[in-house]
Image (cartoon, rainbow, N blue to C red; front, side):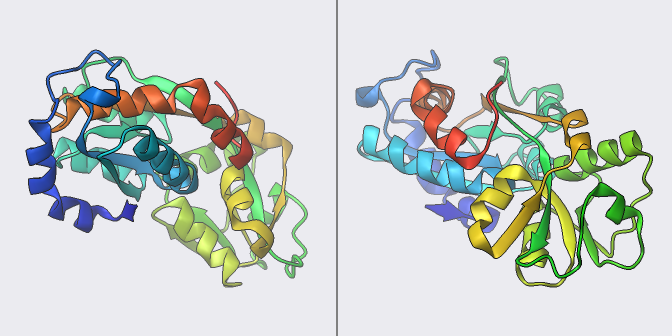
Length: 259
């Protein structure tokens, strides 16, 4: 069950009610009989497909538990958490945004890096813009899309451009990687930089082009239960599930790298 922030906010009363159903267990080893209610997970947009699948698996393993997701740019989610949004778990696409939450005291336990991701060039099916590599992002002719610089996929892109000595010429910058990918699937741009996992998730709607500079900007994804989680027991259990061997096949199938 995937919800945007507005819907997640509407479930505050349900989450608070669920807090009394086991919020005292913060050991990280909560078993099924101690976990109930709603667990609200704020996660990077690039985790939409994998966390959607893992959420279903977690609910199946913990009858009576509902996982509610809010997907978006890690920077925006970190800001919402620091402003008091009622979330139980935060999964970020970059350590920087997790550190923003830690600096505010919203995370007390050490976050765990559970996957890594790298950038890939996405082009519409058939590659109508005849894109061949990263150098094309320094040209003015193709229509190009990038993530905004403050979000993890945008920061990673800036790093690879600096490494390659390329001054990018984007026609648009979007607030999260899924919005960038949409520009490609709709044929509104000739190319974009997204995560390899997003190219995989798009299937035959796009084509992916690897480029060697991507190795210079691999993103670590940390996850942590939040200090003021309304449902601390479920939060600990969800983090444990995501970082367990049970989750590895889902991440591997999506194209993520292991830490």
